Length: 251
Image (cartoon, rainbow, N blue to C red; front, side, top):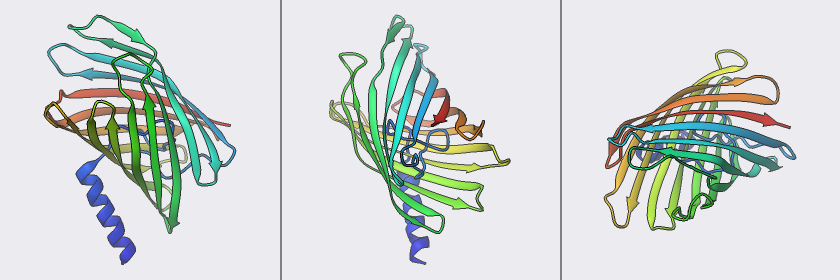
């Protein structure tokens, strides 16, 4: 009974806080939301990724990001890695097309509790502002991940992260995701995300988003991830949608 109450309380927190901004450098088994699963001991993952974000604003703003994630399993329940945006592209009616090397993010995931299909993990990291002079350091000192697994083919993941930016912006971000393997290799995924941001000198903003996509295990060491994220509710922030894809390779 205590275990059930713990799960219900955690889900309630997540539904009130949810995640659009993932900690960089760590693995996941869905589109955006991470799971408590970690890269096995002495195993490496390389994941090239692409994303295109289009904003529904008067300036027709677009962002393109491409990069690489590299993660290593240091223990059976501990992983660490980095994500580097190799090329970012920004274009709008107000800003000329701009190509840059993106930011570098580092993160760690540590699974500290497992019992009967329920597991909990810590996540945290930071982002180095390597893209332009006006970007900020980002720190994610506290984050939790919860994973529930049912019948070997159904899983629910939830997480939240506290985010602090150098420019005195505070955010709470989180995700709730559901996935089911309808075959041995194909998993449709649906996720709900939320981000609350509170800058010192501007009004706070809220974004609620919905993600649909899939993962496909191409073989024992390669997984394809494809997703579409659409903002469904936003306050003091423009709506956007994001197309994303990644190929995870383990060795």
